[in-house]
Image: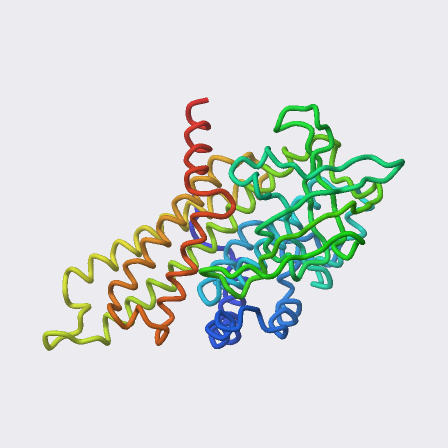
Length: 380
């Protein structure tokens, strides 16, 4: 077992780190305050080829895998979690299922646009009455000749206000049990009958686009169906394995930012005539933060590697996300505590990191759901 990155992966990580330091660090606070990402950042991501990081070269992508994506996401999220989740959703929740389940024609149509950043993608699964119980979704798709007519509401759609293309999950067999009778569709979001709600006012990741999308008798052609009819729920769950690796990477990145800020502040802040970093109480907080984050990173790399090898990784992805999101929130809490009253103001990035960290235990499956996945995998 080799824990060293090869030259190519190290170069990708370093490229992402340089980009995050030069372009995202100076913008992160402004992004948070203005509630959206600077348009220039999207162009810079295109120039670096990050929109198509995991898309095969034949479609204009970099042809790299989930481990490379994990490395990039850690670096970007260390600087700006709103940018990080935007890229994560685009690659893992839209690009990945198209690469795995789409027809050749669908790949030719969409992957070059996704790789270049001409089209940004989103994932439309959650509904007002279907969150953790995703199989309870009520959005319907009804055949009309060779076409499909979609009707329903999707909420908490990350990238929804930016996206040109969404994977929309809808019930195509109303008589089937919850997990059956659901299909996946590739839907251009400029189609007639689609309307967007106002941007959600979130506690954290405020600059990422999160909206409700309403589908009112939206007509899509028959070739919009992704994979087999009535097998969409299986696509959704497979896709979420990759999404959870992405959010685990995000959590490690945010947590690392908390660790770095804590080490810096502990060396600068003096009380009782010495830096607070000399006190054992502070040292133990930093030691625990570093250890938990390193463990989470290794679990995340393991899940990403298994997915790159084509192996089933639902258990490992759930373990990675649970471990990383828990470690991230622990680090954020301790980081704020180390900073004391100063950390509770926006004079430091700590309060933003604290707010951004919380979502990692909620989306792509709450921590409770990860525990269910882990326990069922072990007990089966």
